Length: 436
Image 1 (cartoon, rainbow, N blue to C red):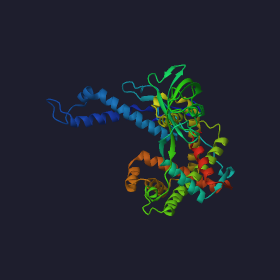
Image 2: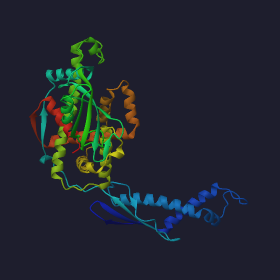
Image 3: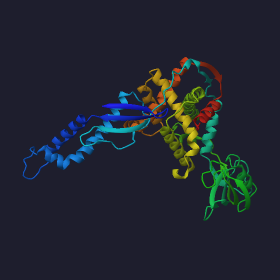
């Protein structure tokens, strides 16, 4: 087999492959002999069918079959031979050129990963959070748990901060009425919804009150027809409610599977959960710093377009899911820059692992899966599910490998301690988890 590699662009390669005719013909003849042992023709004993007859009857189909196999195997061999690192599957640029009895020739294009120079971890500067879970953090979480179990009670009068108001409205936009028929219903808590204009309007009304106004909907509004758009709105308040927050009594405590009903036992359970959350947040915070440093020093690193497209599509689908709309209604283009940064950071972290022979620690993978499984009623079944699903397992392995990379860099980099409160670390980690 002869292989010629041409560099179409920095990450595009063109492979020209030639398979000698004798190699091709040997495979065709071998396949015809196999067929001859299996088929039956009237008047001819099994296994005695002349080669000429087999070629007349099955030659074309066998040739197509062998050519397909040879194209696939020779492409794989060519990639191995030329030490290419493919970022996508090869794409045939033309149909195999093969005259009767001649060589098999074809051309394929392939996108490869970029070549990255040695990354000097000793030049990286990181800040390591210094914090602990305090009693105040535990008390704050207990209050959050109470609020999660709160119920809403109808009240009279205008809504104030902390009250929930249920409104119905119809919006007139440049594209028409939304909805086309009927009205949209929206529930929001005054002072925390983020929809300030609608909050202000609703706060001036009692149940049954109506108002007309012009507002701009938040960019994150769930209806893509209204998200980020200005509209004339006709609004009516349907309900005004206050929160009824439960007390921390024995019944409340036992609802969290703390059978003793003891507040001290509940606090201990809460503290353990917060400490696990803090551990994950610190890892995310450190990783975000490392990624930021790598992106700053490799801002011109070109990344494979095929992977960027896939990542942008993943971000688009995630955004659609969060908004409760169909993915097809959300364009992928706004996510392209974030996708480029994510792919670039992923490649750089993987390159650190490759350059320094950091391999996935199976024990850490198992522990990571068990931590997830502990939150379910049947932990063992969840563990088995992860190990039985290659995609789920690979997602955990990727996370663990990146954690190992961060740990390794921490040993090499310039690291200074930074006093931080629990909430500061959590918020910093949450901000790091958003699209770049």
